[in-house]
Image 1 (tube, rainbow, N blue to C red):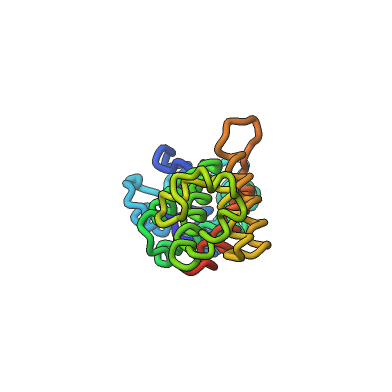
Image 2: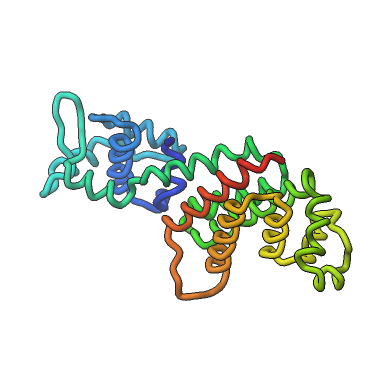
Length: 254
């Protein structure tokens, strides 16, 4: 994972002091780049990669960390390395679980696989929300991405089947609808999202298993979108994103 990705998805790096930045960059070199030792020059290169002004000299900051009690930094002939207790503390705070790395990479790689302009807008917003810790919003935007993808899938491949099933599944509602058959993206507004999922399942446009996933994620979207005292964690958001992207956006070929 690149330094810019880690900083974008983590702390408000630009607001930190140089001492805090250097501690973080030292941890980054250990944790993400698997470096056993580093030098002041390595820290300087990190500043350059981020296009950020660095202190006139990095060595005094490293020396200060080395002299602290308890020590924050150790040094041998190979270079500097974080003292273990500080490394553990920073890893607990900033380290990413495997699913976090997978979800971040998946969202970043997705634009090349999503040709639709509207879907790309939903994707861009979902990634911004996720990277900045707005997990409620990330769930909502990922649902919008997946649901819009499903509608495009219906329009391009299964419109006749959908229109045949609609009056069977919802006869009274269909009789009162503005249109008798869906012909455009806007026409889907005649049905609720849950009703569209039901019609798709009944018409075998999607499998029962996929319907179950979508119905569950619609419930999570509703929870995330509506004001409540129920918290939405990063772990919950990652589960929703992983499921919707892998089972809807990447599986339903438009």
